Length: 77
Image 1 (cartoon, rainbow, N blue to C red):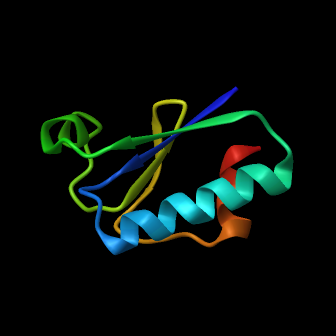
Image 2 (cartoon, helix red, strand yellow):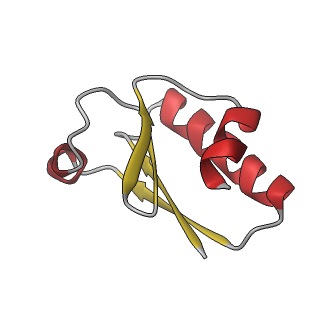
């Protein structure tokens, strides 16, 4: 199972990133769990300075922007 982590304070961009990630995982047909990380200290522990950020299985894949569904699919494969 893939652990998809959305790092951000719950802003509209963070919600959009979560939606895109969920769509990408569903389209790939993979088992996944989405975890929203909203605590600033937890976000900083990932080394992320700009949100929203996306991590897969604990590894940050992108930060400071919202990748589209196709880009997220590549990160999940």
